[in-house]
Image (cartoon, rainbow, N blue to C red):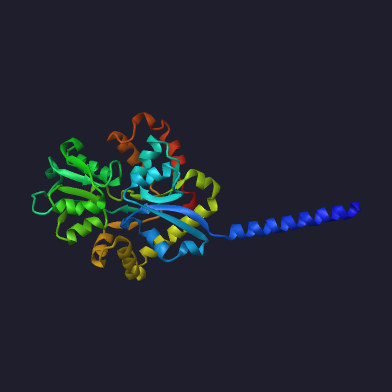
Length: 328
């Protein structure tokens, strides 16, 4: 009798372990849902558009829950609220929030360099940076990449932000504001600079490569908690990102790439073609460039000086990781 009870218990435990194993196998084989963010209609982030269209995430068993943002500051707020796992956004807002507010993120890949421009209203006699003095200039967000580049441009001309009236306008409203004479100029990411020119509303005063050659722009940031618990998934996502970046760079894919970009930016192909001339797509991280962002953002007052780590080199090692870029 006792042996029969023991045998029944053993059989029961075997069944339980088999069922548990089956459950874990089925659960682990289900696509992992990753909360991914990117900036709406930003041609800089073409790599993620390509990867989504090519269904490369699904092929790797990764299910996306996508959120779009109008600027990097909004996206960083989502990271701070624990609402994102990974995101494409500008280096400047990522750095500002990481240092000022302790945002729990790590930069794990580059996305692009250059790709922004200052656009001025046509026929207003603005032909140099110095002519911006006393004018109203719009930025898509304070403390973001474009705002940073505007401050650098003013500095090059011997001006400061006190010499112009800087206002924040969503990128999608900038062209209308310029047309209506509400602003004299704006700085924005592509393809919206080229779109304003195509529509006959403005002229490009200066492209960002003339402000800071090969400047870092967008990056891929990951929530630190997600990174600790899901290294293999992050590795797969960055592999997909690198694959998409290489795909963009292949001339044989050009026509397809323009169609994808047109779809996500809702602009005609000729605007996309022109805008892409001003962007270089990369996956590498320019650590020295990021340090420059940090030091200049402190100088401009957007990063609180007392919060900048004394050991900046040590801080950069915790803020930037090239672990997933080896061999790329």
